[in-house]
Length: 396
Image (cartoon, rainbow, N blue to C red; front, top):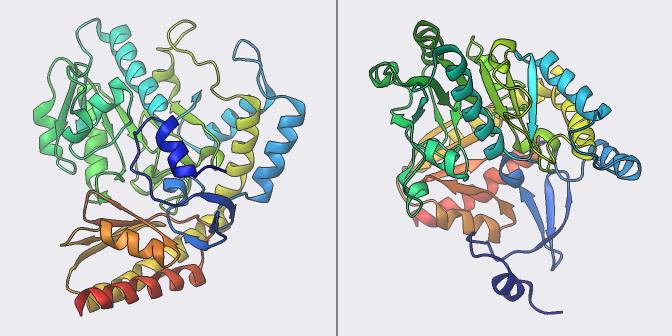
């Protein structure tokens, strides 16, 4: 058999800096590579496999659906899609759901909805959306234009018109950016790819009030922070407000490609037949997987466990901060946790991998820990032991 890395480089676009490991099996919080080496996974497919790898309930849902019905298109009704939409609206602020295949597609739909809603209510010319510096909303042309990071824009200019980037956690910056062309504010409750940035407790309440005052839609991108990751089913629940629109993806079907845009009845009226569509969104197979996933993630006891493990992880990372001066800050919520270093983080990711623990680095200096939400104290202790050993060698 030819070397998998060689075949990859010959046949697949060079769009990823791949780690030289080929995984062949997963179970819970663990993965195995093609040499049989076992790894503790504290990345979860980048906050995707919230129930861990190959969760039995999700596997049964996939297998059952594969034997019954996989695809018929959205020209027809399918039970799993409608049942999933009913559950999402029951569990959230929203009244309506549009299903897509990814977070980028969900955000694309939200951008279109905001523009169409504004057109319907205020006429043409009111289409600008305010987003945040260091945000990340996707890789389509519109969503990369919405992303407040120049490294994502480079080489793709001219960008889609109508996005203004302001400082995260600054109401003054948002207020100053609003013009007679502004129709919405798009924000992540927690900036994941931007370095695990959290807002002040009052920020989202004031942002909600400002959007009401200025007749702007408030859109929450919960692609990474949603579905139990921060210790509540949706991150907005911890802010004391509700948005008009919310986007989900990543963990929604625990590894299968699925995204969703949720909205209030008022906002959702802007979409009618012909305004937006997708061939595969919300198909029976992925919807059944999502129903199984959501049923577990929404259980209050499960979410309480996420908060307890998250608090334990935060305290153990705090112990490392006291010990090693190059750790600037420990920050996080639930099991969306990170440590900011005053040195590059990438070398530590490689050393953890060698030791059989998978983490990653975002924003160059932030080590990010987003394990499956089924992780407990033994997994946290293993992570801390590995990090402590690596950090000790760093200071010698």
